[in-house]
Image 1 (cartoon, rainbow, N blue to C red):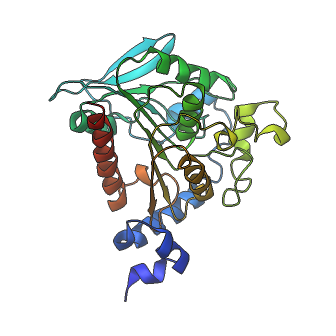
Image 2 (tube, rainbow, N blue to C red; image 1 turned 120 degrees about the vertical axis):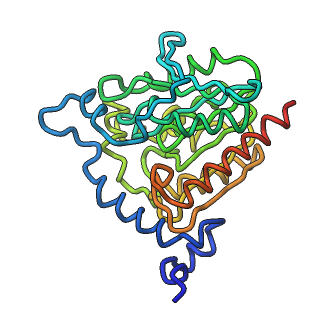
Length: 298
């Protein structure tokens, strides 16, 4: 029996660019993620938000022994320098977690692999998070660190981090070599595939901002000015609720810059956090793409 054929709908099979051979595993993870994260953005009784963040299992808390913690313009960052080759630029990474969860100290292993393969210094930003610090605190922190970077640079992010990366680029469009945007949210009011699923974290992010304003360009980069955007690599799974966000943003982006769009067969949100074949394929793809972008500048 062809498990790929039985798992994927005809539309998914046609849309996906890779991952067909492991679609069943990806789809299983997608279902598990959806069923286990229904209350992800609801604060458990007896915990504060800092306590909840510390106890959440988003990402890998293992720290690279050669990584270092610094503060850039008042913002905590995690820096991974290449050890086996000269540094030839900076990759600014913005973590996901629905803005209110996640940490800049849970991606060392992925950033170490990027640093050694590409020669890029990887900087993960510990931006302020809602509900204690509503928008634009998180964006202001990311922009502050971006402003402090020098030389060739690229930016990337996952989910909420991709949202922030797109807004950073719209605030500071000059001199970026590329954007690596993974299952991002670009319309805070909800594309058709997302619906109202992100209303809880968006409500915390935007605090007292009424819902009818959530599509304003200052909040939702899908509706912002993309003039001057760099080449971008967009990645999303066929079963991600943010599929439409990526499809629509990539369509707008390619009107102003080169776009590569990769759609993973059967994958749901946050598949890059799971022990899946497509996770490692995707990470290898990212390293190669970043290498191509930095080498094009030299």
